[in-house]
Image: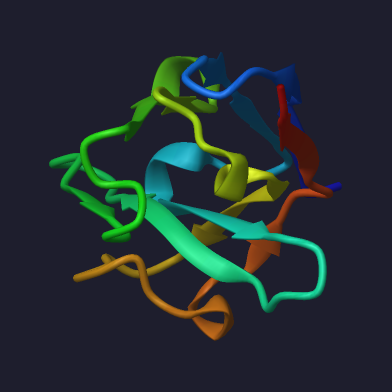
Length: 125
């Protein structure tokens, strides 16, 4: 059974940090580019970041560049989105997704095959 499970979300104050985890089972993470998306209340889901397989090239949306990073540990079948200097507008449900082909940017939802269930991140004072 293919699963992709996010964890690590929660409530954090503006300026704070959170580290999420995206753990895969039922498929080999190292064969996929991993994307990171978010959906805020009343808004469409948007791409945040992507990390390729093999060379680990990363891409970021302008809204998070310099604040968010993404890394992967293929031996553990896990990806680690790191969020620093969080802002109120970062409040959203965050999702990990797996794409079977190398990515040249964060990309679109239709390019990703497997999705996690999402984890809520709330930035509030």
